[in-house]
Amino acid sequence: MQHPDLDDLSLFRHVAEAGSITGGARQANIALAAASTRIRGMEDRLGTTLLSRSRQGVTLTPAGHALLAHARGLLAQAERMRDEMGLFADGGGGQVRLLCNTNALTEFLPEALGRFLIACPGTTIDLQERLSDEIVRLVAQGAADLGIVADTVDMGALPTFPFRADRLVVVTSAHDPLASLPAIGFEQILQRDLVGLDASSALQRFLSDRAARMGRRLRLRVQLRSFDSVCLMVEAGVGIGIVPETTAHRALRSMDLRVVTLEDEWASRQLRICIRDYEALSPIGRRLVDHLRAV
Image 1: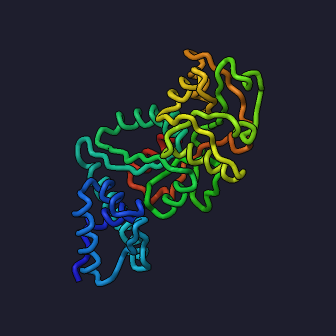
Image 2: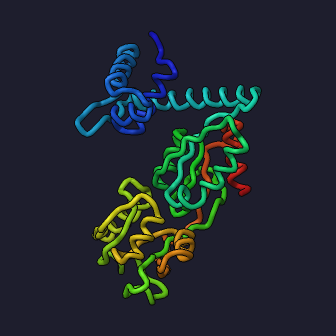
Image 3: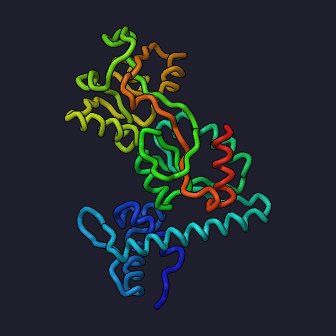
C-alpha cells in the first residue's frame, strides 16, 4: 500500500476542517479539480472511503476520522522538525498556527505580533479568526498550536495563561436616547437598529447566538469589516454598536460618541492563551507563547 505524502495529508486536513473540498482546496491554494482528484487518489491507495459527500459538503467516515488524527500528528512533527532545523540557519524560524477571537485580533495582537515577527524574521504566522469555543476544540485536536480565547468558555484540561482584559460596551451617537444611560442590558437593545461587523466575524456570530438564545434576532442595518468603521457609522446616527471598550475610548478622541456599559456578565471577559502541550510545541511556538505572556 502506498501511503499518502505530507502534501496529501495537509490537503486532507484542510478539507476536513473546512467541511468541504472547495474550502479545503482554497486553504491549500490549489484548484478544486486537483484537490478532488488527490482525495480520490488517497481513498484508492488506502482502499477505503475517507469522506461522505453531499450537496452540503463533506463529513468524515470512521476511517477519515482516524486518518485526520494521524495527519495532524505527522504534520505537527514535520513542522517541529522544520522549525528546529531552521534554528541552525541564519534567519531560520518556522510557522506557528494561531487562532484568536475578534477582539484579540483587532485590539491586542497587531502590536504584539508585530514585535515578535520583527524579532524573528524567518517566522510566519498562520492567523485565523474563530469563535472561542471553536478555538478550544481545534487546539485540543492539534489543529492549531495555540489560541487566544475569552474565559467565558470551558477550556477543559488545556493549559492556559492570562493575556489581556477585555470588555464589550455599547456605543451610540451623541443624541441617541441611550446616550445618557450609565449601563444597559443586551436584551434591552435588541429592539434597536444595530451597526455590526461582517457576518463572518467571530464576535458577530457570538452576538447573534446570544440573541438567538433569547428567541430574538439582531436588527442589523449594515455590517462592516472593522470596529472603527462601526463607530463612524454609529456617529452618523445609523444605529448603535457593540465594540471593545479599548476601541470605544480610542474612537472618542476623534468622534462624537457616547459609551454605555453593557451590564451582562459575559460582556466582561479575560482573554487567555490556550495550548495543548507546551513541551510539544516547536521552539518558535514556545517562543511565541512566552512573548505573548510577557507583553
